[in-house]
Image 1 (cartoon, one colour):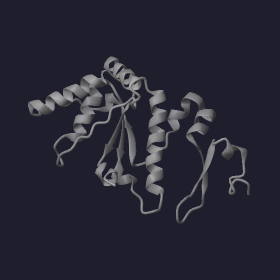
Image 2 (spheres, one colour; image 1 turned 180 degrees about the horizontal axis):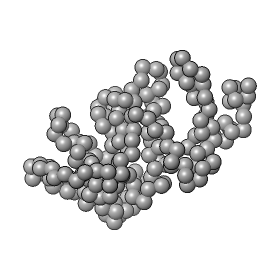
Image 3 (cartoon, one colour; image 1 turned 90 degrees about the vertical axis):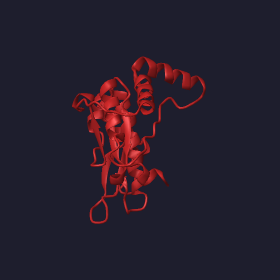
Image 4 (tube, helix red, strand yellow; image 1 turned 45 degrees about the vertical axis):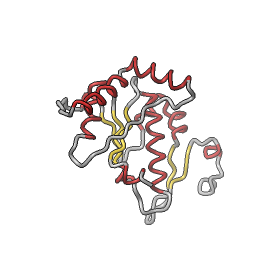
Length: 183
């Protein structure tokens, strides 16, 4: 009974959480990110919550393709590729940190369907040796109150754990982000 009331030391330590099973199922207990790290150590990354809305793509699984763009767009993609080179990326992070800014890059690709936005990210990952945590935002939407926000938070929790286990910081790709980020 203490578990249902969250009256347990494991809840207080933020090692476990109670999750609602949905409309037709019972609640269940799962380990939090902190709990997975405590219980499983370095193997915690093996237990990232996997859903149909996000998947890890390693650079060796990406088929190399040649993409053709106009000169301006090609220069911009080349700049991103160079910035993702590990030495350049570490330098960029330290420059951002000294200015009190977040230590990452955010890039927004826009254009109509089939113009190569997602494939460009795949090729950047392949060329720079970075994994991609691919999140399909449209799959993260839910009609249940608070469920979409919970799923997005879970994406960032998984990404943070992944950053600790990968030698190169992976790329976090939100596909179809306008479905939720527009709000």
